[in-house]
Length: 428
Ligand SMILES: Cc1cc2nc3c(=O)[nH]c(=O)nc-3n(C[C@H](O)[C@H](O)[C@H](O)COP(=O)(O)OP(=O)(O)OC[C@H]3O[C@@H](n4cnc5c(N)ncnc54)[C@H](O)[C@@H]3O)c2cc1C
Image 1: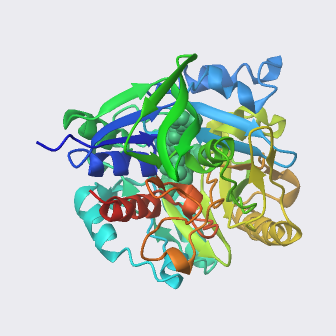
Image 2: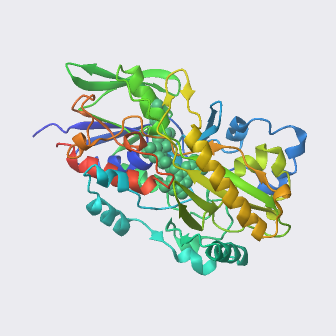
Image 3: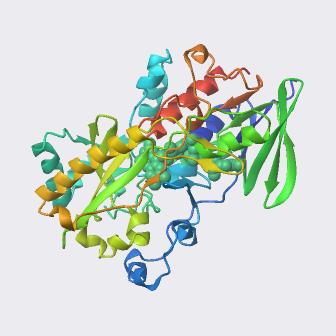
């Protein structure tokens, strides 16, 4: 009998969970996950909000005390957010499931089959619209009146289970929101091994092949070998592991910067709705209603009850310029990014004025970003292999690192489709 081949998948977010699930059976898969199981926000939001004046919430990185799987780091310009734990950043996502593969199509990468499979396999729905609150309906109409063409957001959601609590990004309390933990557990049920608390530091490469990984398991150095290794540690994790292994990435980090424009509207209760119920696509950015928890807790101007706030999110497709490395992250807003953001802020302010909030009462949120990627971007030369030639042949990257361009749009579904295609290209 042929000995079973082994594969290590590093990370269990959008890319890692898909590829682990697809490969298990063809390979004996081990998932090495730096974080632990996901734990939702631990305390009542309203009661904690009362402590905002005490000086307790002075640095966004402290959010980890309340939401242990949310990892926050800072650059000179902005706060970077990612999920560390089983399910990766998908556990913090608002569940948007948008196909956004135009840039990949331009390279000749056809993901039709993979998207079809995902639409069959996942609970993707716009049914939440039936239960929208009057507030959301009012915002949707306003977007329509202003010619902003709002589109109901397809969600990874069991809509009947959604109670409209607005906690999508801090831990859905009913299990209505789908995230990639479901795929991780499916892979484990099929025989994959999941090791949590296992932070991979570097790869062992010899004779042009990757032979294993060096990691810390609950702080202790360990070493694992495998026939195939897939890096899915995300847009901030994968480049560091590659750098530590002597494989440099490009300085093409994008992050999709997010800025909320908000204002007081007593009793509006925008927070009693799932986040981002609809999206308006603009030139290089999107607009969507979004209650920004980081700004709510850590930004002084947001110190009002959540129910008395209205907040519109701008998410920008930024220039692909920046790096994350072992020692530092370098990501700033370029001039073009700032110009586009200013335009988006002006439009959002106009929206709020139409809701009855004068400009002088409006305020901005904290500039943050949660869609890092792009440091090993696919090119047309890799359209058939989805494998960068700088990598050993038995090492693949399957996460946001390989996206060719900033999307300014929700990337989960597209990363999942790419990961599916990569799994189909990996030789047995
Ligand atoms: C608040 C928020 C809301 C969002 N909402 C949406 C949304 O609604 N829809 C959407 O499409 N996108 C959304 N996103 C973005 C989306 O979640 C990410 O772009 C996507 O999950 C990235 O997938 P990935 O596989 O590249 O990385 P991740 O999902 O981040 O997975 C990386 C995994 O690697 C693990 N890891 C990291 N380093 C190591 C290491 N050294 N060793 C071992 N494991 C490691 C991490 O713990 C994690 O499990 C949101 C992001 C944020 C922050």
